[in-house]
Image (tube, rainbow, N blue to C red; front, side, top):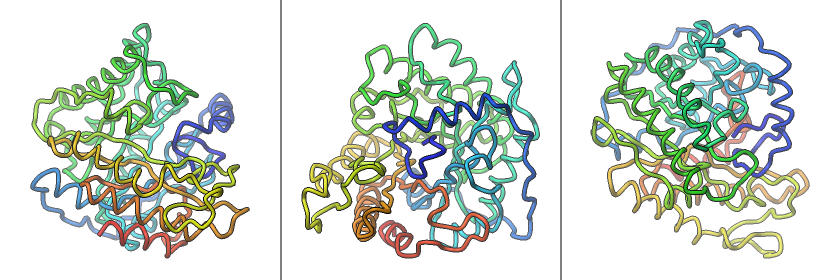
Amino acid sequence: MHEATIPHTGARWRRAALLLAAAALLAGCAAAPATDRTTATMPVPVPVPSGMAELSARMSPGINLGNTMEALPNETAWGNPVPSQALMDGYRAAGFRSVRIPLSWRPHEDARHRIDPRWMTHVKEVVDQAQRAGLHVMINTHWDGGWMNHPTYDQQAAIQAQLAAWWSQIAAAFRDYDERLLFAGSNEVGVENSVAPPTPEQAAVQNAFNQTFVDTVRATGGRNATRYLVVQSFSTNIGNAIQFSTVPRDTVPDRLLMEVHYYDPYNFTINGKSSVWQWGRRATDRAASDPWADEAWVDRQFELMKTHYVDHGVGVIVGEYGAYAKPGFPGSEPYIRDWARYVTGAIRRNGLVPMWWDIGALVDRRTGARKDPELIEAIVGAAR
């Protein structure tokens, strides 16, 4: 997800907001923001998970710190405050067990791809806040203007060089962090403004990006030699994960996870202009729903990820998923809770990790208070 002006979207269908984000980037980069240095809460000790299944259970459910540290040109540009300990404690109190922190890096690098130490320090402070709250954490390289969305042979070397430059620095900075910290190599890498399946060339290059990420992190040593690493399918699409993704070679077994995102059906979940506002077997007006993506479709999608990956020792993280209210259809909320409950349950039944996309609608970003207790309970209850 990378749109600043549309509050709830992580898929690649709605691109108008990208122009605004790009304009903000061209306007210039802000100085590194002030950071919350609260240290009142001591770190919560967490034993090393016995394997992928235990790790997945411990991380479920997760929530995204969306439209914040990946925002361009700085982390408050898209309307959210700088993260705080109160927020992370609020996530934990609400029942979430992990947080995905999307990150931008381009506004904080120089011409040689050296990351500003002030930004790296701030990222570490936010990770520390989350870990003090007892959360597992996943950090990534997010959209950053779509610089990776050119999966072609003629641009492969340059993109891989920049990816390796960043991850060598990020991994070195976090070398001593324990298994509660996961690295995710990228986000929704595909072809900008396209949802088409990849060509053979595009699939091969995007798979190569994943391999570069794994090789770079492992080479930094320390706890990175065995850290859990997350790679992505083309456009983080489930169908592409099954048909086109390859699991990177690794120097240690059973430490890789595949990331996909889930926003089916689009007209119900994130298309604010759509009149589709009902979902599932309880829908009373089939003209107001997209029946193709009802419960049976949900089951098939996550069963495919289980049989293709989980059953073969590769974990799966649903790094973004969600459905959001339409102001013009106030009766949509019960269906949204149905969707959240069923989708979260299906993710967990198949051994995957659910991480809800949120930009501040569930938990107050300043106080950590719950803003939508019913939806939170639908998510958290289904993940138990």
